[in-house]
Amino acid sequence: MTLMTPFLPNADQYGPLDSRNMAVDDLPWKPTPTPGIDMKVLVQDEETGLLTALFRWQPGTELALHEHVEIEQSYVLEGEFEDDDGVYPAGNFVWRPKGHRHVARSPKGALVLCFFLKPNKFLGGKLDGQELK
Image (cartoon, rainbow, N blue to C red; front, side, top):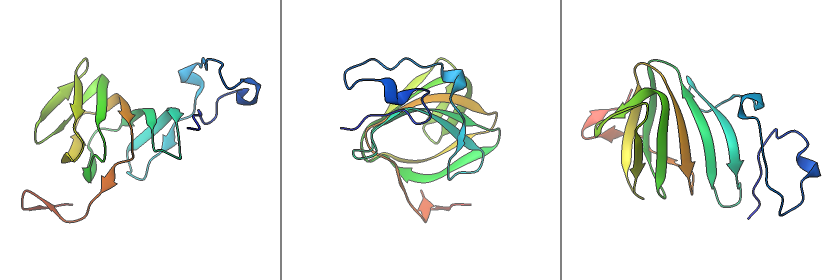
């Protein structure tokens, strides 16, 4: 495993067994491939796909049909997001098992802390017979 935090100030000063303490507000927001969703990577391992990140959803954003290759865990800090299974407001925690597929939306905007063991697999086509936009 090669764990790291991109843009961590003074990252080269840490030894392999040192704790990494960071001011999250000082880390930059980076765009994702989905317009309207930005992220701050807190820790990642590019080799395995492990990722812990904050995701900031702008109001009206939709994340296309995707499959969770491993468990996905999300804790909603602000706002809310939703899918066909329900609405997840601030203070709620939702996890999805390996193989779960869905389209996620945030009509009002959200700030979500997410944990992934592997990256999502994005799919084309339809969900429950409905064409994706």
